[in-house]
Every structure is written in structure tokens, then in C-alpha cells.
Length: 179
Image (cartoon, rainbow, N blue to C red; front, side, top):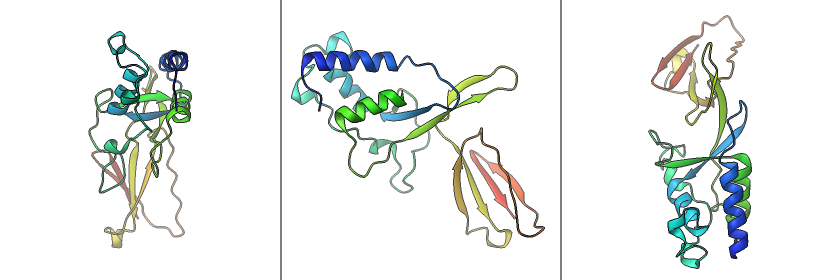
């Protein structure tokens, strides 16, 4: 656990610098619950107005808790979350630093996302917060599907044992493969 003024100051400076990391295709970034991140900012005096409670035990954010970002029924990231309102994106090195200082709530898995390039002629890097979900099933058993999450930048290759026809169709955010 982080304690002491100089440790907090160096932590704040290091994370602030890491948050300026430019996006690069293939890099991994992590989601942090905004409530936890705001509490951490108060604890390390990230903003000048937090000076009164900086370093105080009651301001300590505790272990990283991303449970508010997870849907209870599916165990996946909640839909329609907004960057910097519901979550904060941090690069791998910032995530590792925060986890080493504060830990992660038991039984939670980090919410890791990939930086992808988008655009036909002008390539722009962005963090793919919501990867594509592919539901796959045999045509005769469409209710028995398997969900596979993958990046929009990934290549899909289908191979079948038989000369079966594979149909792809999409609905909002989901690609279906039926053979």
C-alpha cells in the first residue's frame, strides 16, 4: 500500500506521465472504474484542490474494484459505458503500477482492451472498448450457440469438415456464423 508524501508524489507524477502515452496499434490498455480512479486522484493530490485530504487514510482508494463496470448476469462489461464518465483507460505500465501499489479486489479479472487501427485511407488508433462478439452454431441448432469475443482487426477463417454452407449475418455489435 502506498504511503508517505514523496511516494505519493512520485506515484502521481509517474501515472500522469503514463496517461500521456500515445496509442499504438497492438498495445494493451485497461479499464478502471471512474469512482475508484477519482478516489485515487484525491489520495495522491492529483488536482490542487485535493491537498487537504491527500495521503489521509480515509482518502485511500483501497484495492482496484471494477465490479461496477461488470454486468451481474453475464459477467462481461456492461453495455453503453462512457469513457471518462464510467471508466478511465490506462496503459499497461500505469495499470501495473496501480495494481502493485493497491492490488485488485479478489476474484476480479483485469479488463484489458486492444488498441486497433481504423480507417481505410487515414489510419487512426483507438482502444476497442467493446470487441466484436461472434455467436456460432449449426443451422439446425441455432439456440445452441457459442459466443467468441474478438477484435474487429482480427481475421476470420472458417474451416468445416463437410461442404457445409456457412452464413454470416450481423446485428448490432454481434456477428453470427450459422452452418
